[in-house]
Every structure is written in structure tokens, then in C-alpha cells.
Length: 154
Image (cartoon, rainbow, N blue to C red; front, side):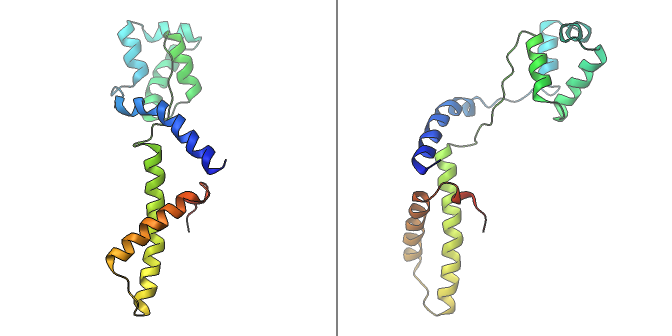
């Protein structure tokens, strides 16, 4: 994917995830599955029958959901059995473009720090304003390069 395609993909994806970021969903302490099941007035036996599973399996699934040890497939099946839609998403903590720019700034900072160190050793240190200008230039340069190289660790 080239940089223009990546930028377009980020823009389109950001439209989808921005509303989710604003929701700030906090799962119920005993898990979504148990909370919904109990709110519906459905017993573990009744849910087990709808899922064609043993009642003990429902308790195990509910505990596994809370600990993070269940599968998406199992949660999807449980949701369907309770007439719910299972929703799964990665929700970036901030806009995708900000994440990309922050990573570029991090990489530029590493490059500038090495440059500044070398120049100090050669008694050619730059002024802070010059370093700041170079950092901004380096960020722009990194952002015009390949999006994949942005995530390479050096």
C-alpha cells in the first residue's frame, strides 16, 4: 500500500472508529454475556439449550469472558443465542493521523538526538531553535516516505 492509499485508508477507518472512541464503553464487572443474560431473565440452562451446550459450559464461558480466555467465535454464538449482535473492534486511543505523526516525531527525535550528540562531540552543537526546525523538517520527511518504514525499529 503506498502512502496515498494508506492516508485514504486511515481517513476512511477514522470515520468508523471515531464514534466508538467517544463511547468509552466499560464492560460490566461480571462480563457482558452474564449481564445481558441476567437482564433478559434467562437462566444458564436456558441459554445452554439455545446454544446446544451443557449448562456448565455457560458458566465456564462467562468466567472465560471476564478473564479474556474465550474465543470470538464463542462470544458470537452466545450473542446470537440471546438475540444480540457481537461487536469486536480495535479502537485507537486517538485519531490515526495523530498516531502516525507521533510515531514520525518519535523516530525524528531519535535521529536528531544522535545527530546532536555527534555534533556536540565535534564541538559543533546546534541551537535549540535549529534542532526544533530540523525535527519538524525530519518529521515531514519521514511522513513523505513509505508508511511501512515508519514502524521499523532501529
